Length: 401
Image (cartoon, one colour):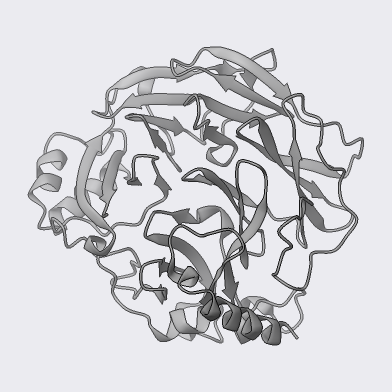
């Protein structure tokens, strides 16, 4: 039944010319990304296909700015926001790598947070204010890190309900609610007071990907895994936990489907029967990154599909311009894009700035080792004045037009 629906959707997509390959993603039109096509077209992907330049920015190293374990930095308006998952702080660094200070502080009082995670941190596009969701509240700070206000998540009065994240969009907040009892999770939209605009729905996720234009219902997921919510241009994207659908919400909260991933026979089983890890493919939702011309995915592929690569990560890219979905060829245990711009280290974006800058990080010891093997004069120059104990290096690639 599902394959029939996907075939029907594909026919509809062809009829809506040229929406399937249109990077503007008009409401109601969506593209289908075939996993089989990605596997069959596995190849080397060049950084120059999606970027025009690359630079290396070492973060300043001093006692107050030391980073133990960097995960996913956020770059916006020339400021790097760093969440150190070995600590409980949010650091700010300038575009030149200089340490600028902290955002908020750890604690249980008003304006304080218990832990800082890159998956619960975002920047409000309107004011450019940083937000952190922790301990049931969303805390807003100004650009200098001073407390502005906080909004509490809705009281769902259910011990088995966990609120994973809140993300501000215009005057509303997208809240991902996980209900352990039912094994489902929900995307609930609340207003500026924290009041849900819709109650938690009691319907199942539709079997069809066609959503009526006047639909304003929240999205229901069939898993308790986290959804990925991120800004893209002037809309909000939501990647469902199964990572088979990317939804779009506009400023009026109108919901549409933009992308559908067709796993076909490679779809991971919903139970552990027949060892689904060996027999299926799944995408790590939270590591989805989207630019004007591409969407970057991180995937796990089972042993029965690629026996020599069991348990290893694979990466895939969907080129919006050509409509091609491609799995990256692994080279020397690396599946990042080959840096043909300056001969530097292979590159893979883990975040994107509103200014169109893709960001990747390397520890100092990794950077020094990579610089020795590379043909990049700039990498070698930067490596010459850092040590293995230095803070990480930010690698920034500006997206191509």
